[in-house]
Length: 424
Ligand code: AMP
Ligand code: GLY
Image (cartoon, rainbow, N blue to C red; front, side):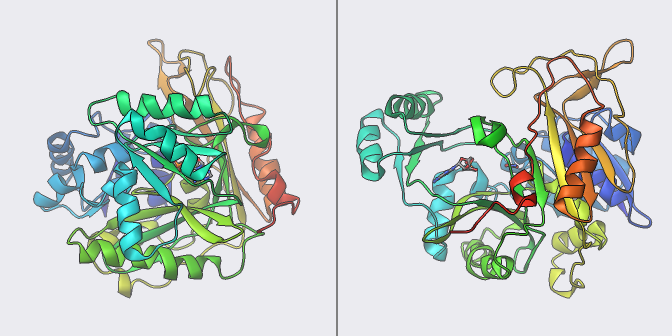
């Protein structure tokens, strides 16, 4: 099977490396990065350019195209590929609106009876005060459009809430902001892969969104993740599949915009029950790195079954009885203003049974050195018999990789490993 993976982050690196473990699979990644290039061929392409991606898929004689990031999905790249006859893992532009517009996602959740935070959509700055009053502090203020995980401000400071809401509305033509009820309780990322009618859940993970230890500092794209969740209720995955994932798939099909690809439910386990914080229309980053580390079944068969509408007959997915932890190594200034150019040294090519170093914001300088070229630079992923051991394996490698200005969280999976997370 010849598979084109579109994207250039650590998520795509994990996808490519995992797919390559399946028998008879060849992978081309576009545009990829220097780390991915150690595993498979890479080709330059602008991921949001549907015609260019389709031309590349044609040249490569791809049997399957897997689209990693949200931007090409929202831009309709999956639609262009499907019209050209390719099997694609990733939703249409219409279905990707579940991620592209928070207001659309709320509307579908309401029709599907899926529990989420109560919310007000504001399209005019005069509506901001009323919406903030409706829910009180802590204030949750979200850019309605795509913002790479950084469009959300959760704050006790009303002035900060107002400033962010104004920036979302005035920042671009048609700008809008969603102001919503604060959800307490631990967060879970649960992914489901779907062919538009059936949905199969993957191993639940937890992401660390804030930049600093103890969930301090601004939101990022994600500073680390782990799976499974020893503290989660035993029926969490089956309950969320029944009450969230399947109803969303059914409602999208009913609307004539079936969702085929990966549906990512960001959940809060609150004192009043499980609530959806957000949906994404693609694999999460960095959760994918840990989820795939536990997957024992062939990933290529699962993604192909989604792309060809045959998920119902796929054998049940199997999971390794191991824990996985990933730690993101970030560049100086991330997330506000990442600084590029620092030279990276250490075991950046690791790919062993216990550890994978996945590349994201890396590139080659003119003289061939590996240098920082983005905010999240590397995603160091390790497995172990339990979370404590997986942490040791991951941090052992993190401590040996260096670049100027590097920072990471030292508490990824720590509370879970110590049994300090409790569901209300
Ligand atoms: P989102 O981009 O919607 O996933 O939001 C990013 C992060 O902001 C989430 O992972 C939560 O930590 C936080 N967040 C978003 N919505 C809420 C909410 N209603 N209540 C509490 N925290 C939230
Ligand atoms: N880790 C959060 C995301 O992928 O959106």
